[in-house]
Amino acid sequence: MELAKHSKHNEIEIIKSKTCSCYFCRQSYSARDVNDWVNDKDGVTAICPICGMDAVIGDACGIPFGKADLKELNLAYYGDDYMGKHPDAALKYVERYKRGAITHKRVNENLYIQYLSLLAGRGDSQAAYDLGELYENGSEFTPADPKAAFSYFAMKCLSSDGGALTRLGKLSESGALGKEDPRGAYECYAKGMAMGSMDALVHFADCYIRGVFVEKNQEFAFDVLSSVWPDCYARFVASGGKEINVFPDVAFRLGVFFLYGTPFGKDPRVALRYFLYAKFGFELMRSAGLATAESEMTLREVTKKIADLAKKFSLMRQDPVFDNDTFDDTIGEVASSPSFLTLQGGAISGVDFDKEAHECSFDIAARVPALVVDAGNLFCGFVPGSIHWDFVDVSDVRVGNGAVFGKIGGNSTDGWDFIVDEGGNERPVLSLVFFRGPIKRKQLKDGGGKA
Image (cartoon, rainbow, N blue to C red; front, side, top):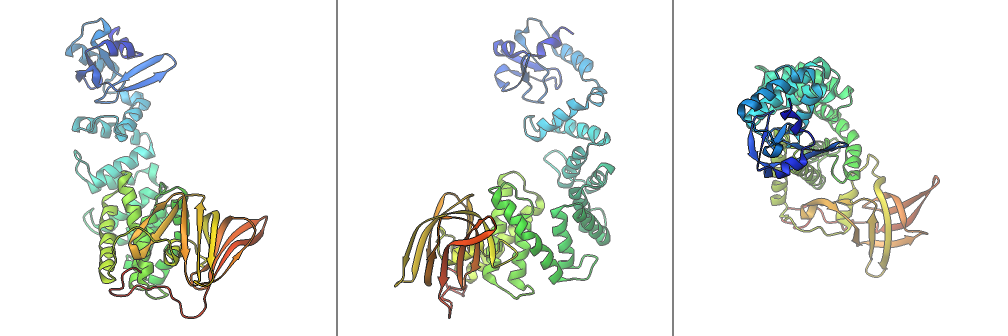
């Protein structure tokens, strides 16, 4: 049809128009509402602000048209079988709806579900997963339907998807399908973990924490979570908090272990440190629009545990103090080996050692923003740029050649080595030696203020 030609490469006509109409959604609106365009080698095409399709015609096209014409065009170009024959068009609509380029309202969400179903039926695993998520969590227009969610997560195209297997496990465990299925949940988590899903691994560990289909085994669960923590931490820090993954989930569970007792006993300070990691990670998920009902529930729980510890030890949220305690908090649990820790490397400058006062200070400019934790001040966050550190209880400072280091070794009792690797030959560019004997490091005590 001649009229349909005016929906392509129509930038000038839309600019000249007062009103526009879309023959996909058959809605009319001010031409000034058109703010999205597609640019290709032949020209610029308007995108409908309501449905996100390139079916917009302006009243400056020179051809009079009305609602009957829009309906005729819709049937001709977007009939019942159009999307089935053109899955790329369905996918385009789905992607635009997901990123908010199409107005979220009931009629558009119904189309979104219709096109997702079409794509899932053609074996599109992402479409099947999106439908599973939509029905598991529900939306403003679509009520939650656990059985529908289960059916989509269980589609053949997702049979090897670790994330889908994890969701099947959660639905089976929760009893949302009518009754609890602990065996099915455990088997889904185990298979999902085998497929490489970190989320499945976390829930697999939960089975041993709570005794879901297996005997409780706290030590095994702690070992599983501890084994993946270094990688979770490294990915989180290296990405500047963008690759969140299961970082806050693992941190929260390790915090609970240290609060109530690990194979190595209780340590409220380490517990608090992990809870601060978890809270920070979950809040980043929320700000990035990645929060789920499950993550929000865990965030509420970890926030309460932090508040309880703060009340018990008279702690207040304040700016971090870059001292011995904060340095230990910041790097004390970032690797499986406590004597050889990676901190992404950096450069040291301005070393000042007061031998009589037993104090040493210097600046560290890290290669990536440091994820600083100060448990005593309830602080956790990325600190970009150079950080000025002040250490006390220093008995000796040994300065080597150079300033750039790649790793940190040592511990809070004996001291720290900032190490450079020169072709397999490792040497410290700076070593801090602490006093042996009674440790002056402040511990968490009831009413003790800063940790």
